[in-house]
Figure (cartoon, rainbow, N blue to C red):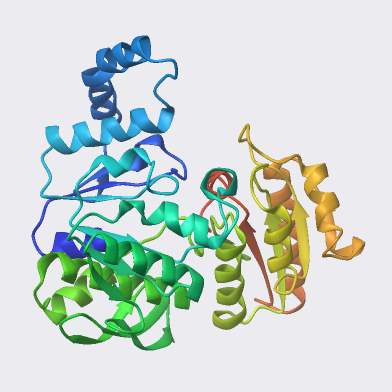
Length: 387
């Protein structure tokens, strides 16, 4: 969203995000398009000798993510960008991306994730993430829990940053459902913008739009033209985030991989669709909170197909199935280790239900980014019903 707003303002934008859904090149974007494979290779070749030199002089080799981050910075220099939108990989304070001197830092809602590295309490996690706040910069805060907000505000004050809070300096004024997404009105830092079509589902995406507008206004320190804002948001896509990838039956893919993300997609399914039967296909990574994920799903889905992704970090399906038994009845659980087989089973089950009453059943695929990406590729091969 931030990328689109800056692009509509006429800036040449570079974007670095992680992880990727399907293609490695998604992580580095120039002018709204993934870097080409050729340019990705050339970018790596530009720094390969330096990576080898660093590895030879220190006990710990450069990590995969650190190398990728360096490649992104090289790409932004070689294919010059006016503005770089950079997503921290994990945490903030010690993240490879935190070498940049950013004018604006955006903090989305903080939940429990990467606890083995970031801390076991929300306060500890917030303290680490707040490490991205730079002296006398602008800090844009999504709505946070009170204990998290206290930590973030204290850190912002310590570095003399200007703070803009969701619900105080900016907010979502109004939202209503629309075909293919929602219609929202936003209260920004410098003005209100009415009747914005956002082609994404969920109140969390409306909140994200408010944060994006505030971030760009914080950077420019001027009011944005209303029509420019509407145009930018109307072009937004978010692959793998409540994305409808199949229509008969409806299959929705969401890359949620922690309880906070699962809560968002579950609330969206409950409030913005009218399915009578939801069949979830779920695979998670071994280092994630599988208990928390399944607990949040339990009240929103009717059946669960337990599977596993091809990621080497995947939690074995049989282990996930045992955890699922704590939240679902035996007749609600199906164990199919092969992801393609699990998807086929769920789609066929939903199709049978829809033969009785059209449109009552849908499939939700979730649990990890790896699951969402692999499922997206598999479903694309199913044919013409893919959107």
